[in-house]
Amino acid sequence: MPLPSLAVVLRTHDFVVHSHRLKPKRDVSLVAAALALAAELAGDRPEDEPAALLFALSLHGLALSDGWEVVPWLLARNHARKLGLVLRCDEDEEVALMRLRLNVAQKRSSFEEVRAWVAAHLHRSP
Image 1: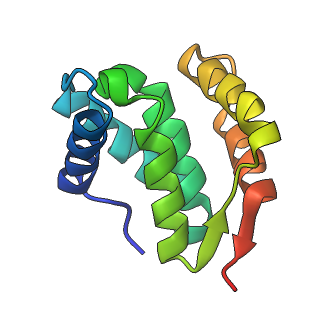
Image 2: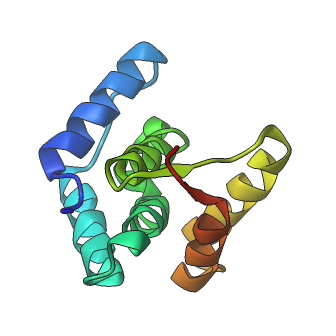
C-alpha cells in the first residue's frame, strides 16, 4: 500500500492545527522530504511503513511546526489501519513514545529503534 500522499499529509496537518487551534505554519518542502525518506526506509516492506512515517515525520518535525506532536502519530496509526493492523500506545507508554520521538528529532535515535517500538505495538486488526 502506498504511503500517504503529500496532499493527504498537508490536509491532515491543516485539520489538526485547526481543530486544536494551533499555528497553521508548515514547510511543504520538508514534508515532501520526510515522505521521500519514509518511502526509502520502508522499501518494499509494507509492515515497516507506519514506523517509517513516524520516524521520518518526527525527524523532520519542523515541517509540521505545532502539528509535530499529533500529525505523525495520527498518520502512522491511520496507515497501519489501512494495512489491516492496529497501532496502539497505552497511556502508560505515551511518555516513552514521546521520548523516542524527541530523540529522533535530536538525531539520537535511529529508524531501527522506532521500527522496533512500532513492531512491539502493532497488532492484527480483529
